[in-house]
Image (cartoon, one colour):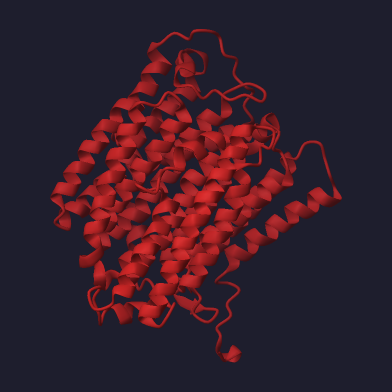
Length: 485
C-alpha cells in the first residue's frame, strides 16, 4: 500500500483521540497524585467526554473514508458516536458516590469506561471488517475487566469469567466469519464486499453463506439476541450496577451500529436471503425476553431480560430493510440509552454501604420514602413499556411502522403483543413502589449531586424525545444520506 496515498485525518478520529488521551490522563493523575477519594477522576472523565462530544458535533456533515479506507467518517458513525459518549457521561455521573460505596473507586474503572467507548466508536466507524473486529475486542476486553472489578465479590468474578469465556467464543465465530467472507469476496472493505455480493447469491457461493452466518453469531452475542443471550442475566446481575448500566446501552448500541452497517447496508443486496433468519431471531428474542422477565424477582435480572426483548424490537426494524427501518434503529437506540440508564440509575443510587437493593419487593413503599426516585423509576418503566407520551412509545411506533411498511405485518403484530406482555412486569415494579408496604425499613444511601443530575438528564430526555421527537428523527434520517461510502 502506498503510504503517501493514505488519507490521514486526525480530525476524523478526534473523539477517539480525545477519549484515549483522557483515559491516559486519568491514569497519570492517579499515579502521580494518589488520593483516598477519586471523585476528581470522574470529573476529569466527564470533562473529556464533553470535549469529545463537541468534537463529534463538529464532524456532523463530514463524509470521507480515512486511514486507507479503514475508517469512515459520516453522519451515521457520528450519530452513534454521540450516543456512546452521552451514555458514558451519564454512567460516569451515576458512578460518583456509588464506586466509593462498592469499593471500586479506582482510576482503572474510569479509564476502562473510556477505552470501552473508544472500542464502540471504532465499531461504528469501521469501513473494514478488521477495524470492526478491533473495535469489538477493545470494547469486550474492557467490559470483561469492568464486570469483575469488584474483586471482593464472588458474583462479580463469576460474571467476568462467564462473560469472558462466552465472549471469546463469539469473537472466534465472528473472526472465522470475516475470514470466510474474505475468501468469498476477495476483500475486507465493506464497499468492495457490497459490489461483490451484488453480483452473486448465497447459492452460488456457499462460503459466503457460512461467513455471513458466523458473523451473525458474533453480532447476536454482542447485542444479546436469542439464542445468544444466555450470558446476559448472570453477567448483568453479578457485575457492579454502574457497569451493568453501561454495558446494557453502550455495548448494545455499538453492536447494532456495526450490525446494521454490515448487514442492512453492505449486505443489503442479499437481504432476501438473510431477512427470514432475522425474522426468526426477532420473534424469538422478543418472546423469550418478555416471557422470562415475568418470573424475575431480582430487578437487575428483570432489566436483563428486558434488554434482550428490546434487542428483538431493534431487529424488527432491521428486518424491514428500508431507510425508515434503519433510521428507526438509530432513534430507538438513542431513546433506549436514556430510559435504560435511568432505570439502572435508580437501582444504583439505592442501598446501603457495600450492599445494593436488588429484590423487587425491596422497592415496596419507595413512593413514600423517596417520592422523586419512585417517580423517576415509574417514568422509566412506562418508557420501557412503550406508554405514551414517553420516548419509548415513539421509538416502538417507528419500528413497527417500518415493519408494516416493509410488508412484515405479522412481525409487527407479534412485536406489539410482546410489548403488551412487557407491560405486566414493568407495571409490577410501579405497583410495588406505590401500593405495597415494606416488610422492614430499608435505609437509603446518601445520593451524590452528580448522580441526581444524571437521573434528571435521563428523565428529561425520556420525556423530551417522546414529546418532541421530530428533530432527532430527522437527524437519524440524515445519518443515512450517502452512508457507507
